[in-house]
Length: 109
Image (cartoon, rainbow, N blue to C red; front, side):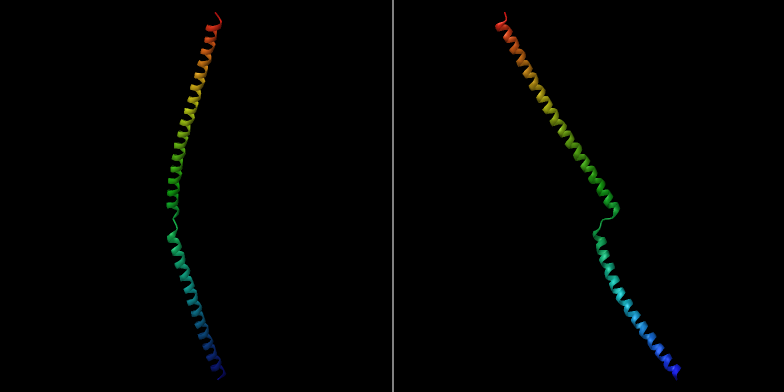
């Protein structure tokens, strides 16, 4: 009888352990599935590396083109400024030369 009672208690303990294990597994599955849904949603909002690299290269090329255009524009402006300064210098030189020639014509005869 003692053995039957012990066997019954062992079966009851095993049933209780199996029930607790099933409850724990169910709780884990719920939290795991929730986490997976959140990760899937997050992954949908992300960009993959290949697409990122393509977009990054396009942006780098556009920035390079913009820099080249800006450099050309700055070069043209600088060239105009140098050209303008040269014209002013030549005009000043001619006026000075005319002044010297005029002085010689008027005063040195």
